[in-house]
Image 1: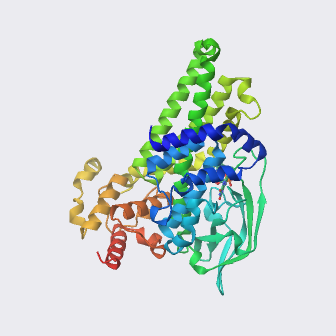
Image 2: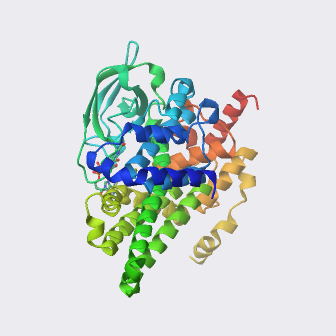
Image 3: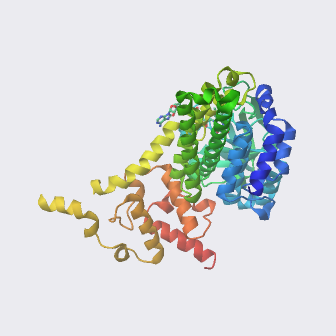
Length: 364
Length: 104
Ligand SMILES: Cc1cc2nc3c(=O)[nH]c(=O)nc-3n(C[C@H](O)[C@H](O)[C@H](O)COP(=O)(O)OP(=O)(O)OC[C@H]3O[C@@H](n4cnc5c(N)ncnc54)[C@H](O)[C@@H]3O)c2cc1C
């Protein structure tokens, strides 16, 4: 077992039992965030030259799977922190010193504010305005469903200028930001989700990360691609955790359940699903292309939804008990089919990539 | 009619090799990548790839990722413009400009 796997195992031993309580309370305790930060994990996408401990794609994936197997909200923290850090590292040279060390150390939590009332899958429809004013850019609009939006100190905001969509870094203390926490949603209940209103918030012009027009296609899309990779591995982790719970339950009580063929079929399909999803994630690690990442996320999210559902089935009433990991993973897994590109959006893109290989010659 | 069918059948083979249709090594690399992506060996170096079928925003991102990795360059904020990725020729020009600026 490598060092990361050992750290993850120890972390799970220390914290997994409390994850049901975080879910019930609807909040991730500060000390858990500090425990993750202390291991350097919040700097997993920050280059070493800026205080991070950047992991290679497979190790980053293992980290997401490891935390995903403890708590999806916690994995969500790693996801948003890493996606924003990665975008700043790649596209925000002027902001490296201001943000990367703080993000790596977990002194600042980052969030992506893209979705709006009228723009979810179709992010090109966002209405948040970004206008030039004396002293910088003024941002006005209301963002919904911002993971860790409640505790974030830095938002990557998708807005629109007359020349097209753009992405802007907005510090929490910029003034004019109102945060409304969301509680009691289906899943990711400890992910400090919030609706965030930007009411004429002014930031320096240099906070714009993408040329107008490219902010969506090249900045937010790149962040979402990173997030998708992380969610895909997180799904592998939660599915694996549910497979373990199911198999352990089946062989307990002298293997009474393990004798039933129908239970064996459920467990076999869990093994098949988890293995397939993991292989696709490993494939995506070696082929850094957005459509491969999307395929991995699509399959992993569907697998997580199916495996967590079957786990509740195999576990029976035990898996429905308040605070049981199976019922929590079951609720969380459904959301994996929505976030970072819904199943249908993934289908559209994966299919486009396939059709592309067949279309031009016929048309010529 | 018969020739049309034969043309389609032999499609790829009848096209000239990419070497004959590009003006430098960078264009050649990009052309090879696109030809494998589209399984089409008849792409023109100046053709608008966003006008080819089934190209979406994710493919635009794929092109950025490919160009940055393949040529080991970082594309600056202001160069992240769809027009710089619209054709083999445009991408190669962008690579050339960034390399020249970096003194390579
Ligand atoms: C727990 C949670 C956390 C989230 N965190 C964040 C966050 O941190 N930052 C952020 O910006 N957003 C976040 N979101 C929002 C999330 O990204 C969106 O919910 C998601 O993109 C879908 O958008 P929507 O909800 O508006 O649904 P819609 O886009 O309206 O989709 C509704 C249904 O229509 C389908 N559909 C839509 N368009 C098409 C199409 N073109 N073709 C086929 N089918 C289509 C969808 O697949 C879906 O089934 C979060 C959401 C949740 C639930």
